[in-house]
Length: 183
Ligand code: IMP
Ligand code: MG
Image (tube, rainbow, N blue to C red; front, side):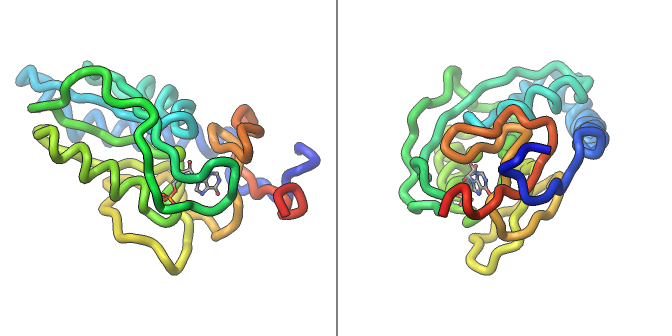
C-alpha cells in the first residue's frame, strides 16, 4: 500500500467486478435504443472519471460514442468552491442522443447539478448519471443516480482516477488519503 494511504476501501478486483455489473446493466438498458439506431453517448467528466469510463465502456456491449468534458470547482483544495467552470466543452452535439454521464465521485453534488442543467439545454433524448462513488455527507444536493458504484465515507478519497493535487490517480485501488498529506 502507498505510504500516503490511510486505508484501502475498494480493491482492484472489487472495482472491476462492480464495473462489469454496471456495464451489463447499461447493455440491458440501451440495447433496444441502440438497435433502433439511436445514439448512446458515454460522457465523462475529466479528469477523475476517465479511468472509470475507459473500463465501463469495455464492459458495455452496445455501440456507443465517448466524449469528455472538463469542469473545475476545486482547484487544488479538498473542498468544492461551488463555482463550476467549463474548461472543455462537448466535442459533438448531443441533441437526440441518450447521454450517460460518468462521474468519479458525488460529494456536494454541485458539479453534477451544474452539468445536468447544462446538458438539458442541448436537448438530448435522455440523461442518466452513473457515479463510481457517492460520499456520505450531510450537505449534498440530491442527484438522481441510475447507478452508484460504491457508497463511501466523508473523507478525502484517491485512486482509480481520483486525485489530490493531480497525484494518486494511477493507484489501482480506491483509498482514504491520510489527512496529514493535505492539512
Ligand atoms: P462535488 O461538486 O462537490 O460533488 O464534487 C465533485 C468533484 O469533486 C468530483 O468529480 C471530484 O473530481 C472532486 N472530489 C470530490 N470529493 C473528492 C475526493 O474525496 N477525492 C477526490 N476528488 C474529489
Ligand atoms: Mg470529477
